[in-house]
Length: 222
Image (cartoon, rainbow, N blue to C red):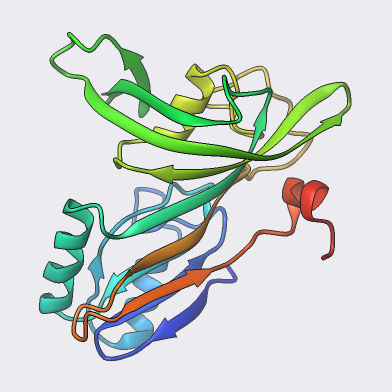
Protein backbone atom coordinates (compact mmCIF):
# COMPACT_ATOMS: atom_id res chain seq x y z
CA UNK A 1 0.00 0.00 0.00
CA UNK A 2 1.08 3.58 -0.66
CA UNK A 3 2.26 4.74 2.78
CA UNK A 4 4.49 7.81 2.94
CA UNK A 5 6.89 9.45 5.38
CA UNK A 6 6.04 13.15 5.84
CA UNK A 7 8.78 14.07 8.31
CA UNK A 8 11.66 12.29 10.03
CA UNK A 9 14.55 13.24 12.31
CA UNK A 10 16.48 11.52 15.11
CA UNK A 11 13.59 11.71 17.58
CA UNK A 12 10.29 11.43 15.70
CA UNK A 13 8.64 10.35 12.48
CA UNK A 14 5.33 11.46 10.94
CA UNK A 15 3.80 9.18 8.33
CA UNK A 16 0.69 9.04 6.17
CA UNK A 17 -1.30 5.83 6.57
CA UNK A 18 -3.43 4.82 3.59
CA UNK A 19 -6.97 3.61 4.12
CA UNK A 20 -7.16 -0.17 4.41
CA UNK A 21 -3.71 -0.61 5.97
CA UNK A 22 -3.48 -1.68 9.64
CA UNK A 23 -1.64 0.68 11.97
CA UNK A 24 0.06 -2.29 13.65
CA UNK A 25 0.20 -6.05 13.13
CA UNK A 26 -3.13 -7.87 13.48
CA UNK A 27 -4.50 -11.36 12.95
CA UNK A 28 -4.80 -10.87 9.16
CA UNK A 29 -1.03 -10.89 8.73
CA UNK A 30 -1.29 -8.04 6.21
CA UNK A 31 1.52 -5.51 6.05
CA UNK A 32 1.01 -2.84 8.70
CA UNK A 33 2.41 0.68 8.86
CA UNK A 34 4.39 0.19 12.07
CA UNK A 35 6.23 -2.84 10.68
CA UNK A 36 6.93 -1.06 7.38
CA UNK A 37 8.36 1.96 9.19
CA UNK A 38 10.46 -0.18 11.54
CA UNK A 39 11.92 -1.95 8.53
CA UNK A 40 12.72 1.45 7.03
CA UNK A 41 14.37 2.70 10.24
CA UNK A 42 16.10 -0.55 11.16
CA UNK A 43 14.85 -0.47 14.76
CA UNK A 44 11.65 -0.47 16.79
CA UNK A 45 9.43 2.62 17.05
CA UNK A 46 7.13 3.87 19.77
CA UNK A 47 3.47 3.70 18.73
CA UNK A 48 1.90 6.90 20.10
CA UNK A 49 -1.66 6.60 18.74
CA UNK A 50 -3.60 4.52 16.22
CA UNK A 51 -6.04 4.79 13.34
CA UNK A 52 -8.65 2.14 12.53
CA UNK A 53 -7.80 0.08 9.46
CA UNK A 54 -10.34 1.77 7.11
CA UNK A 55 -9.25 5.24 8.26
CA UNK A 56 -6.38 7.09 6.60
CA UNK A 57 -4.24 10.03 7.60
CA UNK A 58 -1.39 11.29 9.75
CA UNK A 59 0.31 9.38 12.56
CA UNK A 60 3.34 10.30 14.69
CA UNK A 61 5.86 7.74 15.97
CA UNK A 62 8.68 8.02 18.50
CA UNK A 63 12.18 6.93 17.49
CA UNK A 64 13.62 6.81 21.01
CA UNK A 65 12.36 5.76 24.44
CA UNK A 66 12.79 9.32 25.70
CA UNK A 67 10.69 10.67 22.84
CA UNK A 68 8.06 8.01 23.43
CA UNK A 69 7.73 9.10 27.07
CA UNK A 70 7.51 12.77 26.02
CA UNK A 71 4.76 12.04 23.51
CA UNK A 72 2.90 9.87 26.02
CA UNK A 73 2.87 12.86 28.38
CA UNK A 74 1.59 15.13 25.60
CA UNK A 75 -1.20 12.64 24.91
CA UNK A 76 -2.10 12.41 28.59
CA UNK A 77 -2.20 16.19 28.98
CA UNK A 78 -4.15 16.74 25.76
CA UNK A 79 -1.29 18.70 24.17
CA UNK A 80 -0.99 16.46 21.10
CA UNK A 81 -3.82 17.79 18.93
CA UNK A 82 -5.53 15.47 16.43
CA UNK A 83 -8.11 16.74 13.95
CA UNK A 84 -10.12 14.80 11.40
CA UNK A 85 -12.26 15.46 8.37
CA UNK A 86 -15.27 13.24 7.88
CA UNK A 87 -18.32 13.07 5.64
CA UNK A 88 -21.50 12.30 7.54
CA UNK A 89 -24.84 11.07 6.27
CA UNK A 90 -27.29 13.56 7.69
CA UNK A 91 -26.77 16.42 10.12
CA UNK A 92 -25.51 16.76 13.66
CA UNK A 93 -27.61 18.72 16.19
CA UNK A 94 -25.80 22.06 15.66
CA UNK A 95 -23.39 23.65 13.19
CA UNK A 96 -20.74 23.61 15.91
CA UNK A 97 -20.76 21.73 19.17
CA UNK A 98 -19.53 19.00 21.47
CA UNK A 99 -20.66 15.39 21.78
CA UNK A 100 -20.29 13.80 25.20
CA UNK A 101 -21.16 10.13 25.61
CA UNK A 102 -20.13 7.10 27.63
CA UNK A 103 -18.83 4.24 25.50
CA UNK A 104 -18.44 0.56 26.22
CA UNK A 105 -16.48 -1.81 23.98
CA UNK A 106 -17.90 -5.23 23.16
CA UNK A 107 -14.86 -7.51 22.99
CA UNK A 108 -16.80 -10.22 21.15
CA UNK A 109 -18.02 -8.03 18.28
CA UNK A 110 -15.22 -5.41 18.38
CA UNK A 111 -17.86 -2.67 18.38
CA UNK A 112 -18.49 0.10 20.86
CA UNK A 113 -21.86 1.33 22.06
CA UNK A 114 -23.21 4.32 23.94
CA UNK A 115 -24.27 3.39 27.47
CA UNK A 116 -25.61 5.15 30.54
CA UNK A 117 -23.14 7.23 32.60
CA UNK A 118 -24.09 4.87 35.45
CA UNK A 119 -22.64 1.88 33.59
CA UNK A 120 -19.38 1.05 35.38
CA UNK A 121 -17.89 -0.27 32.13
CA UNK A 122 -18.60 2.94 30.24
CA UNK A 123 -15.79 5.42 29.53
CA UNK A 124 -16.41 9.12 28.96
CA UNK A 125 -15.92 10.18 25.35
CA UNK A 126 -15.70 13.83 24.27
CA UNK A 127 -15.33 15.24 20.76
CA UNK A 128 -15.75 18.72 19.32
CA UNK A 129 -17.11 19.26 15.82
CA UNK A 130 -17.68 21.98 13.25
CA UNK A 131 -19.75 21.58 10.08
CA UNK A 132 -17.73 22.95 7.14
CA UNK A 133 -20.06 22.27 4.19
CA UNK A 134 -23.33 20.54 3.41
CA UNK A 135 -24.44 19.11 0.07
CA UNK A 136 -27.13 16.82 -1.30
CA UNK A 137 -26.33 13.72 -3.35
CA UNK A 138 -28.91 11.16 -4.48
CA UNK A 139 -31.50 12.75 -2.16
CA UNK A 140 -29.18 12.36 0.84
CA UNK A 141 -27.87 15.16 3.03
CA UNK A 142 -24.07 15.00 3.31
CA UNK A 143 -22.03 17.04 5.76
CA UNK A 144 -18.30 17.70 5.64
CA UNK A 145 -17.28 18.00 9.28
CA UNK A 146 -14.08 18.82 11.17
CA UNK A 147 -13.63 16.87 14.40
CA UNK A 148 -11.21 17.36 17.25
CA UNK A 149 -10.88 14.58 19.80
CA UNK A 150 -10.57 15.37 23.48
CA UNK A 151 -10.50 11.68 24.43
CA UNK A 152 -9.32 8.60 22.52
CA UNK A 153 -11.86 5.81 22.82
CA UNK A 154 -12.35 2.72 20.65
CA UNK A 155 -14.16 3.72 17.42
CA UNK A 156 -15.02 7.00 19.17
CA UNK A 157 -15.80 9.22 16.18
CA UNK A 158 -17.63 6.44 14.40
CA UNK A 159 -19.94 5.52 17.26
CA UNK A 160 -20.55 9.04 18.57
CA UNK A 161 -21.55 10.51 15.20
CA UNK A 162 -23.79 7.52 14.48
CA UNK A 163 -25.42 7.88 17.89
CA UNK A 164 -25.90 11.59 17.16
CA UNK A 165 -27.95 10.70 14.08
CA UNK A 166 -25.29 11.24 11.40
CA UNK A 167 -23.16 8.13 10.75
CA UNK A 168 -19.95 8.32 8.74
CA UNK A 169 -20.30 7.73 5.00
CA UNK A 170 -19.23 4.19 4.17
CA UNK A 171 -19.13 2.90 7.75
CA UNK A 172 -21.30 -0.21 7.64
CA UNK A 173 -20.25 -1.23 11.15
CA UNK A 174 -22.28 1.61 12.61
CA UNK A 175 -24.73 2.03 9.72
CA UNK A 176 -25.49 -1.50 8.42
CA UNK A 177 -28.02 -0.16 5.88
CA UNK A 178 -25.38 1.80 3.97
CA UNK A 179 -24.72 0.55 0.45
CA UNK A 180 -21.04 0.93 -0.39
CA UNK A 181 -21.34 0.42 -4.13
CA UNK A 182 -18.08 -1.53 -4.24
CA UNK A 183 -16.07 0.87 -2.06
CA UNK A 184 -14.25 -0.33 1.06
CA UNK A 185 -13.06 2.86 2.74
CA UNK A 186 -14.98 5.08 5.14
CA UNK A 187 -15.03 8.87 4.93
CA UNK A 188 -12.80 9.58 7.93
CA UNK A 189 -9.33 11.08 7.56
CA UNK A 190 -6.82 12.25 10.19
CA UNK A 191 -5.84 15.44 8.39
CA UNK A 192 -4.03 17.47 11.07
CA UNK A 193 -1.48 16.80 13.82
CA UNK A 194 0.04 19.37 16.19
CA UNK A 195 2.43 18.91 19.06
CA UNK A 196 5.82 19.78 20.49
CA UNK A 197 9.13 18.25 19.51
CA UNK A 198 10.14 15.74 22.20
CA UNK A 199 13.74 17.00 22.34
CA UNK A 200 13.64 20.72 21.47
CA UNK A 201 10.08 21.43 22.70
CA UNK A 202 9.50 23.49 19.53
CA UNK A 203 5.95 23.40 18.14
CA UNK A 204 5.29 21.43 14.96
CA UNK A 205 2.24 20.83 12.80
CA UNK A 206 1.40 18.79 9.71
CA UNK A 207 -1.67 18.85 7.46
CA UNK A 208 -2.87 16.50 4.72
CA UNK A 209 -6.25 17.29 3.17
CA UNK A 210 -8.03 14.31 1.56
CA UNK A 211 -9.18 15.01 -1.99
CA UNK A 212 -10.24 11.64 -3.37
CA UNK A 213 -13.17 9.30 -2.85
CA UNK A 214 -16.23 10.95 -1.33
CA UNK A 215 -14.09 13.91 -0.20
CA UNK A 216 -13.68 14.88 -3.85
CA UNK A 217 -17.41 15.68 -3.83
CA UNK A 218 -16.57 18.61 -1.54
CA UNK A 219 -13.02 19.55 -2.50
CA UNK A 220 -12.99 18.67 -6.18
CA UNK A 221 -9.56 18.99 -7.77
CA UNK A 222 -8.61 22.20 -6.02
